Image (cartoon, rainbow, N blue to C red; front, side):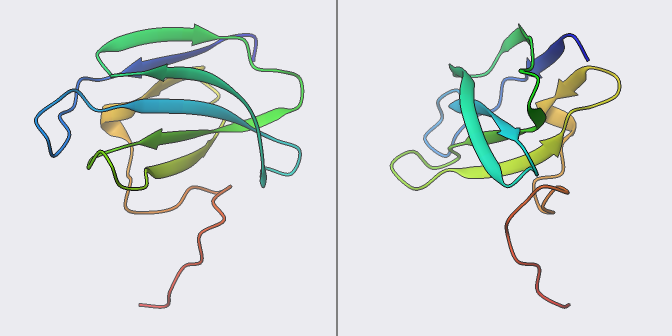
Length: 103
């Protein structure tokens, strides 16, 4: 993949402000966080050139500012496009280090 395009849809935090977003690369085996590539408050579209060692991305967001961020880990998409509005934040991605509990 030569370019990754991310549509950071406008979402509102618990404080009624545009959601803060932060993007970084996942490298190696997907358990190591690499350099960051985006910091902003949604309602934007950005294009990034993944480094050779990138296997995915970690997207952090702050629904409640002042608390720790939530995040989702994603592999680099075949389509070259990620839209934040369509992501399932309730289930860890394939590179997530979160432990899953048996339900």
